Length: 439
Image (cartoon, rainbow, N blue to C red; front, side, top):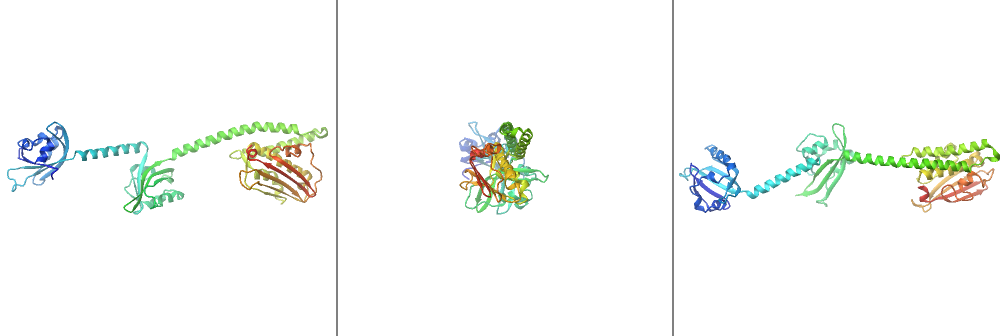
């Protein structure tokens, strides 16, 4: 009570008595207030409010309170809570009014600052198209701003049961929301992205970012929500464009390499005894083998293939008869290297058809490969093993196939090639470094 100013006034609004606190608030000695009109202390812009408050006093409404500015003796102003009430005639027969003045300048400033801060926050959220939300895990409810519900495609609501959200949140993402915060991590950041299906059928990506809290034993999360759909679509589109550009560059690179490979084939293929028909048949056979590999790479999403696919493609006509066994880990091989490797496999297959296992009803072929150390990223050893059939003719040392396989020199791809003739077949081995596999 000592912090408040008091005064009584007659029915003309003249101050009859006041306490010391009121004089201090207004900057007057205590006795100087007596006889002055109460409305003289009220700011001009608030005097209409003061007069309405006075006029509204009656037996039915004996008191009223309003916030208004008062003027000090030095002309400065302050905000006050002014309470006016009719005096009781049995205690103060000469007094008509009783006035209480409470200085609320600091509270008013704090409140205005809070309002301004909230307005700035609302502006920032609106500009960023963000919604505010809170999940109470004890009560299993979720609340949010109008913008939050708009992001989800739902009508605004004060509260919704948390379980109702499972109807729009993707099943794979539901645990990100439904699982309560861990009790050993109070104040931890919360940052997830979930997919939702709005009632209108739209699929949207939503980011939920905030904090995990435990207030008075109540587990909750609170934060902001943003619709990331357009951003994710843009990111995916850019990634697709970059990938397509890379494929186009690879396609151009492989196309230029293809002409070089065809030129090399033409140079290496000889016309036996001047037989142009045989030369033409051999040349077409090699180019068609190259075409098969080229189509396999073209149909690949990243213009690459695997050792397994290249081997299986070449041996497919013989696999159903049970003459082939193909084993090895999944190893990718890039476009240029894949074309060279496919030529090696084609020469081995062609040689086997003419002189080995694939040319008769006996024997089998085992094709296998693995990392030398058994760990990915190391060199690869490739083996082609024919068993169960005596070879009809030896490998020609000066032919096209011998040059591709590296019988007496470097193979078309890889290194350390070995060709072993056996009584019942042959074994061809080749090593490929990681750099050679990537072409």
